[in-house]
Image (cartoon, rainbow, N blue to C red; front, top):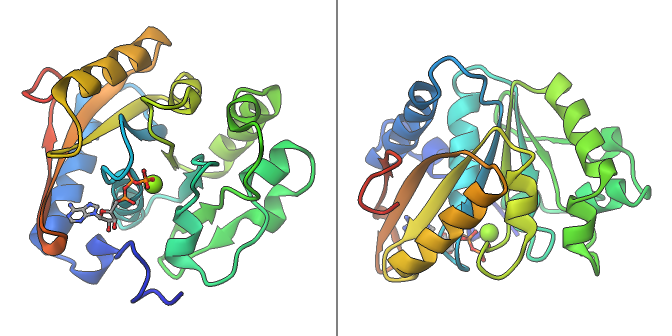
Length: 232
Ligand SMILES: Nc1ncnc2c1ncn2[C@@H]1O[C@H](COP(=O)(O)OP(=O)(O)OP(=O)(O)O)[C@@H](O)[C@H]1O
Ligand SMILES: [Mg+2]
């Protein structure tokens, strides 16, 4: 799969200065401002249901941080339907799940992208027990090691209303960006997802209202709404 045919277009990179790219920059800036001096290095991107744009948001937020000259790791913790590595590379490799079960080494799995400062840790082989792997001591250890290697870690995740994975990883993160796509999810489902994340002590940094007009990425946009805004 080439970059052009990949289902995730690297919006921020492809169209620097575009409205879409600008809106991710704004999201990045708002994240920084929303934390009042507290370190936010590990950010989980979550949403209630499938197809809301978590992966797209995670990729573009990561690119946005990388363009700020931060060393950035995009970590695919959607072990159920991995999509991050496929958006960047043609070949698949070992990844997070393989490392967590002791079948792979971090230094072999980490992949440098063609975007300066941006690295990817793929999800790896789809395991039978994603929640268990993500909640393991090995995951905590790995995250600690990654924190010492990267300025920012952006984490993709499976839909939070179906699986515990986002809550599990959310509890290990410094903050969560909640994606909600109009027409795909109800406000009630978004609310339940937010409460579920807060229940495990995750800090909601804000919500991205991801709109689209009939799949045309060019005419779509993502807006940042501060916590307490309409959609949260
Ligand atoms: N703002 C947008 N405008 C138009 N299309 C979008 C937008 N955001 C995402 N998409 C498209 O919608 C589809 C789903 O997006 P994405 O894969 O990022 O969502 P996801 O929440 O990660 O889905 P999944 O549940 O499958 O992991 C993709 O084809 C993506 O290119
Ligand atoms: Mg996804």
